[in-house]
Amino acid sequence: MTLVYEGQLRCAATHGPSGTTLITDAPVDNHGRGESFSPTDLLATALGSCMLTYVGLAADKHGWKLEGTRITVKKEMVADPLRRIGRLSVEIRLPAQMDDQALKILTNAVTTCPVKLSISEAIQVPITFVGQA
Image (tube, rainbow, N blue to C red):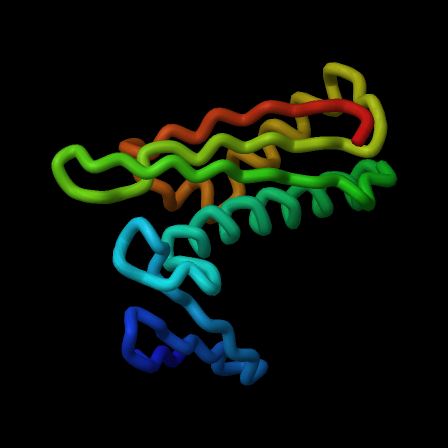
């Protein structure tokens, strides 16, 4: 990744292999314009995307049809004593009811994705599964 500061608390990040660019903007409550993802939003997004990828891997392995699974990540900031993410609440909405064994497999999948394993224990990450999207 290559990042360039564009001024006014905005950055452009370019993915080296693909050339895809995304913009980050500081949130309004931290002196920014809030016109794009903030850096902390990207962490929450990375967590959700990683978890969905691992749901997909588990679905492929077990022959489950889980297209349409949705993850919502609610980010909560704290200031104790410095501003940081304090909690990332994850709701996983499945397109079909899954039995207890399948939910155990999916729970293992989402809790062992690389982004989840890389998040500090100082950040709470409660996970809730909801059947039927």
